[in-house]
Length: 365
Ligand code: GN1
Ligand code: MG
Image: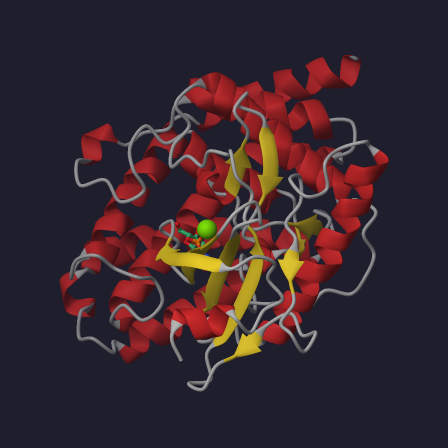
């Protein structure tokens, strides 16, 4: 089936004018469906079934979460067609369509007049981004329906190390012998990372409903620079709030690119860190527990470490998970994310101080 035939399986209004690739996600394939006249445009996605083993359950998660947020937006007098994703069902009422190759497709309404960024270009934008994720988490704070874990142990380091040990042992692509140094980066931090996870497992750090993939390009900003809508909801699951904070800092506060070939461009910007933290804590400081606040700065280290591990593990596995643009792309990503991790480790005391001051500031209000 071609893209046009697939798009026609969904309940679209308007006649399809064209379908073109969109964005640069690493997992799903994304297209925009342009329609004629005044009908809305749509986002068409081939969901990666190798990575999401239960796409129907994932779409059901997204339906529940977007229904919940839509009610909140309506109650606040907002615009429900722009401030939350709208999933478009297939003609048979299902939230997905399976094509003749067994591939899973889903459609949502395209929200126009928005901007997506790959990096925060100003502290003002970082502040708005933090505020937007703080609001997103707050909107879901009273969401109590069941959610499926769409990717097992997504940010669970115990699980990640289990996968890691198996990958290194299997050495599927024969690359382990060339990356002893990089493997050492992972091993030397193993205990520290597992110690954090223990606090989640024993309940010291609570679990709430979080996004889990808050890199900056998963957020749509309006023309005034405010967060309009949080997209890419495939990984919304119960998890510590830290995942969203840490993953956002990994992109908002990186002075270089995620896969920068010039490592000297990569570092953590404390200015962006402060701005994002300020926006986030303006929404959440009074709602989080002290343990959540105490581990907030560390979460940037944790998630960036996890990203180093995941990129390197995919390199070891022979590039099975992430889309790559060159043969050593996953290794390049590993190096760039490790440089960011080192920069965070060096500035960790300052990061902690910023979280402390900002929290006190908002708790006083
Ligand atoms: C993937 O799909 P995308 O590009 O938004 C990945 C994230 C990684 C990110 C790295 C489901 O996000 O976990 O942090 O790439 N998503 C999944 O940039 O694995
Ligand atoms: Mg994305």
